[in-house]
Length: 249
Image (cartoon, rainbow, N blue to C red; front, side, top):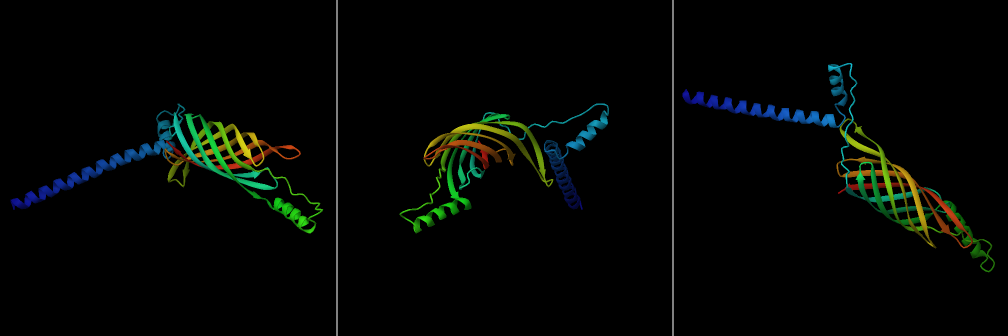
């Protein structure tokens, strides 16, 4: 009987210890969840309502810090871009890499290196095919001329970015992502088929931070440079779309 009492007492102590440990872990987890909710916009409104209820005559606002620290940090971003408008005879796509140095969360500078791939548009293909057909019919006296096409081959550019607006967005109530709206202004050197030209660009974009290190950046920008032909020099004005996947070092 005494042995049975000892066994029951020992089991009671073990169960009590396990329950106490579960409650402690649950309390820690709940506290962590509350802190995460506060930082991730999930519980801000409820917390603000409780604070306002304590002193209704006082206006209370919550301004959250950025989730991603960008003070003197480097970022590496592979990049894909495509020309949306500009040349009528060909389209250009580019791939390369960008390197960013974030001076503060509001300012950064970058260097881009891109290599271009070009394809004839339906208009450009029809003009080339018409010239080739006419030449095959009248090789000695062809009246149709092949169009002059001076396409980009590579770009090396530098620029600076300003991030005036930031916020956080909830995806289906399950995760929180920080976003930044930014402007971009820069210049560089464009290498074309027949000449090398000075390039300038300006754009607007949005960056999404999926984690403290991983980001996605989408940007629409204007790009200007000069293309030289046999009889003239033409100012080129392109509108392009750029997509980047960044990794913060």
